[in-house]
Image (cartoon, rainbow, N blue to C red):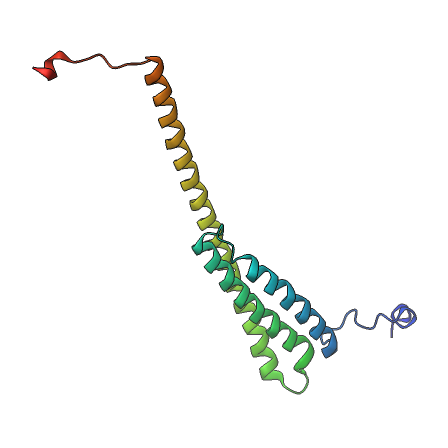
Length: 148
């Protein structure tokens, strides 16, 4: 046994299987943070597609966190080898799904930003056009041929 760990009481370092109480603490903190963020997404300023993507990410992330806590603190790898492996495989799959959702969220954010810029560009162009019309700059010559 490492004497440094025995002296300072840091027995958790280097372990892959943690005491169950440590996983409960992490899950409780994550649940509080997730609940706060879920409520924050209820604001009207958050676009519906972004709200749905981020809430899906919260649900999947919570499942990944519970599975990781189960694999690292509740399932004994020496006794239950198959459930241990299946749980870690679920964690990896969940992380993959989270990465895909994050990419989709990034693309949606870019698209929403592009639409915002397009609306602003059209609005500013119309304002400039109205100001030019008021000042008589760039006025179109009247076509008498069209009137005849």
